[in-house]
Length: 473
Image 1 (cartoon, rainbow, N blue to C red):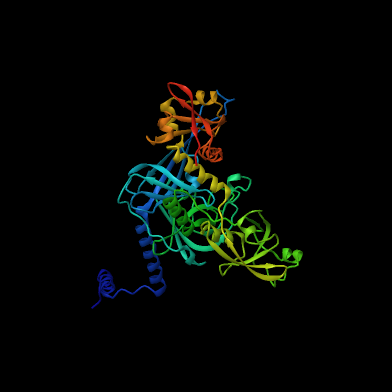
Image 2 (image 1 turned 60 degrees about the vertical axis):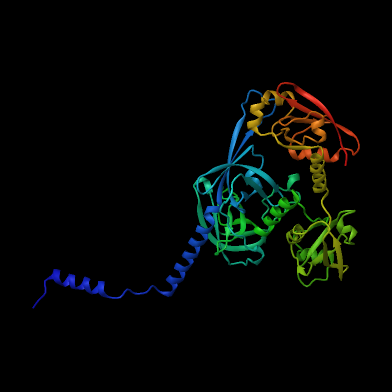
């Protein structure tokens, strides 16, 4: 008996439905496992990744009074590292900002304060007034290997939370992203994780994750000439960033070891031949200079020495030495193996502290002893006080310059005894105009111990007032 066409089709469908489903091939299962790992890492980290929005008012030169002030809006990402509101980001995300707003994954928004930063590695630590926040665990970035899978989370181009993936392409990468002509960047440390995980403007400050969802780096920059992604991304290793957090929470400032040498970035075959070095291949780091009275000089290092290892770790690039020294404190001892006049030698060096760092530390200590807490004058408070462009111009402030404001006064301190109050705007010290918070701290550090200095204040109702404060260490 012949079946109808419809009956035949129905029989085929019933047979297909009843047949056992074929298992996906092994290669597909492995890809599905990788996808699950990506999802797990993303779900673990996403609640701790925040959007950072900054605002800054450009103060135009006093010789262009007819041009209105303009407000610049910036955007980046951040990574919550403690339940009580500490957030890691990049220094360049918040540099010069008059206000910082942090939006959490649950859409709550908080004003953020800058706890501190280290511009040399482009890391900043922020704080918001919140508790019981989600965090993401930190990994040991020293254990990363080229070829490891990594994931980047952030808020690129204002599009919202975004996940991208790639592999570690290089470690300890020097990329030349810091402007070498800038005084601030003269000692910049570049030892980046390079990856092909896609990041774009807005990703800066977000985490770079391993497959377990742990932070291995803070996404920082793109190696590009267009400002947009073309294949290489850079992240600060989390171990370096953790040094910033530890220093700020322990000491209230960055504490770095200091050696005091100038180095060739790489020892080349040409330099080996030129200097007549007995090396079978390019290795080690060539010292082109040793600063007088520096820890290196006191430890017996000389121009022309080649550092082969530090504490048993071989070094072949200047940034390797910078990174190793960065993780040490002043007073720590390091053991160097060097090559001098083609003879191997051992040298023990006691690390010191950079003079700029020492002066800033002294300045902060003196300000505290005066009974003052100060910060850069925010735009919102300047407007509230009436410290407008006309007042700034009259007092001689140019574009990008700004005074500091007193935010707290110890009632039992010298400043309170002289009548100094919160919201007083400090414009000069000994007739030197205060143009930034960092400059103010340096001014205070350089004042002569045991003598009085004149602090010039601006008040909304009284205009300029002057108070004499004794500097006493």
